[in-house]
Image (cartoon, rainbow, N blue to C red; front, side):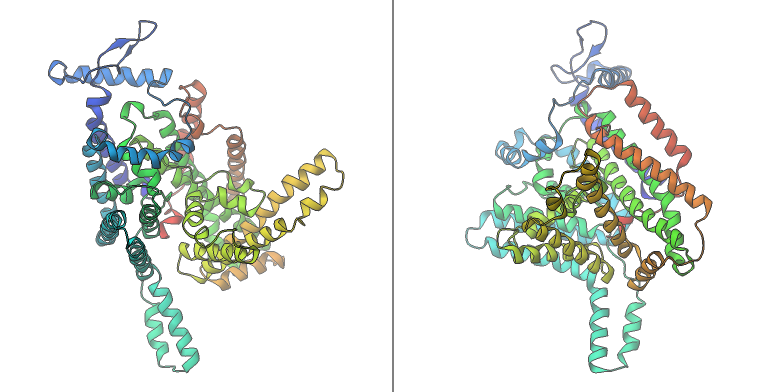
Length: 568
């Protein structure tokens, strides 16, 4: 597994140390004063550190005292400002930063180090495909400058950027899929059987997908589109823009970060002394726990089940369907949590990518809670430009269906993904139809009088169970290697077919994960989560939770599996 490999741990540790050293003149090089009690040293008031007058021993002692104080009384944290409100101000802040020029651009050395590290990180994973990443960065950076400076050809330059990006995605991700399907159509229409051999040879080719191509191309497209809309100003340097696209924590599997959210932080980034260390490490620990302890435990059930569908009992098939629904959530949200925590250590705030999606009471709510960065990207750059819900009911249904169809295709070059996305679009359109006509089940039942329990069941539990059940069934299309395997899995469940019973070890693993998942959702609803710890001082209960998670990861971690979204 990438994040538990010795290479990654060594790489991340080295970069963290170098990054901290580059910040040491600002975060540690300051005048020492006393706190209100007069007993504990606090260092962050005035003046740069004069290295000539201090030894290495003093530097180490200074860092030690400062870390203790920050953990104890929360020094250096921002005051009561949520991530969401902070990100909402980024576009205007970014434009101000550009006007101030070098006065606010004090992070060049840090950014250069992070850029070098991010490119090195990608090269170790994909080598030659680094050229694709650099090409996307280069043409969008210079096309962005042309969009800003041109008065009559803005749309032309924007269309050029979109065509280059979509063309790259089609070539490297969908060319193999499209060529096979086009040849199949030609063979059926023309009945030229000699083409079968050629088609079989194409199918046998092992198509290598550039890692993270769907993510960094969508990120880069958000930059040129926002420039065209006048939301942001162009990046001042190629290096800054390249860092935005290639930033290693979220490069290969998201979250998809928009330019208006990330670029401002290159100019107004928090310093090392302001990094909420406990919150950052808690994000990372939580992500590791989700992935290594829970998701990889479920992967053993899922991999066995989908490799032996014909032999399964209906109950085994049902548990495997539920297992994959939990696995994909824990796996992907675990990666996002790790990315958020690592980015926070380097002074960058990434927006949350998951918000308890399986508690959704509607499909529109589900997509506001699941893979939030992709959902918001599709909404801002596809759904709204198509007209959104402002152009009549029928066209709104069309827009919902098309956006989810393309969203499904974004996940992979397979008919399973297309069908999966199309069915989600159909469910969203169906939901919109009922809400528009005011004939939903809940609206009709509100006219009747129910007891408190019945009202909770009708208005909350039933919609939540319905959305979860349908979403879980659709994940079968996502996991199955082909459509026939997915249909076989459905038949196993709905016909109550007999076969291999669920082994006790698998049942134990599933029950353990379900218990942790339930407790985690309750904790999330009660705001016991790293997201809410950033502005609070270190407390014993936080340390206890962190220690329990660390011990659980050590004792309960399963053999590593690749992250699911690495293939997208």
